[in-house]
Length: 404
Image (cartoon, rainbow, N blue to C red; front, side, top):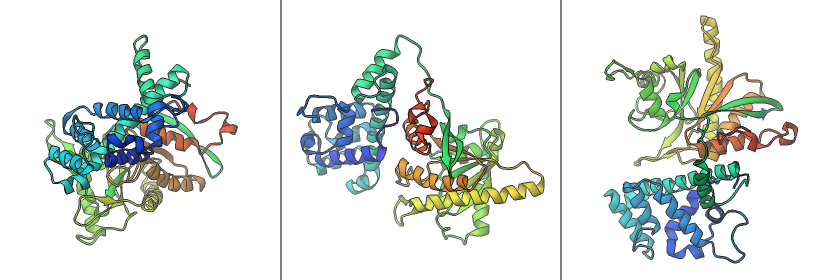
């Protein structure tokens, strides 16, 4: 499995959910092409040799990497990996996993279960990323997750380890024109010297609590003004967004999906961040804690972002302020919104490509936090360039920390 052929998180998650429904004891009966290829590698194994033992070993390795605690315990019960649960019916495994969190079976099914299985899929993709990096370093360009992780461990001791770079300039093509975009692989509050950062929001433009881990929460936390002891003085981004909704939105009513509200950046000004654009793409489901995000609303919001950027630039020019030139986009809707990373990026790129094709002279940045998503985005961006004309393929993008 090469660096640009990592499995999609959504595809891995779908097969993990199949395993949960059937249980480990019925692996032989399941069709799991993604997990099978990850566990044995393309072309590996003998003809007719059963692959399900390798899939089970892969799942056990991924769950063991979850670091213990309730998350790992619930995963073990959900999949039938806990001792004595191999042949338990799915309802019994779900009931026992719900007990780990101390919630009802129905609540667990609607909330914690997807998180648990999603984390299993996350670990599987991380193992695949490690295997791909090991295969590339070894010159084979592929191999199974188990073989790749073993090779990585064997090859790391003789020489110094390398840190993967957190910024990548990637060539793209839009409207027949060659451009470059920047891909960031780190937390959003580490951004520096980018004029505008887009923050995902729900249609009520209600920011999450600052102690949470989402992009919007991280920006709210980083933008707050604090005294020397770290105590909150002013929740500036939150306050400005509330003022925007008080001015433009009737009390208690949501804005239309795709709306974008602009605020200042609070303390992030000291990092060179000048504006935060809050993109309302998540529509809350009544009576639940869940959201729905449609790709078309993501595209609509990013299109509005570019229009708002042009409007604010005109006002900046009239006031004699420096222009807004750079823009950073996270994968909108790819968290609790339920979109896969591929779906989110496809919706983002539809608007970005249209803007660049029209001649928009913006410095565009994309932001992801996890390396495996960076590999996916790099692969998708590489498809915009004619590899023959460029004389290179997506594999030339240095995402593994090694020079090309």
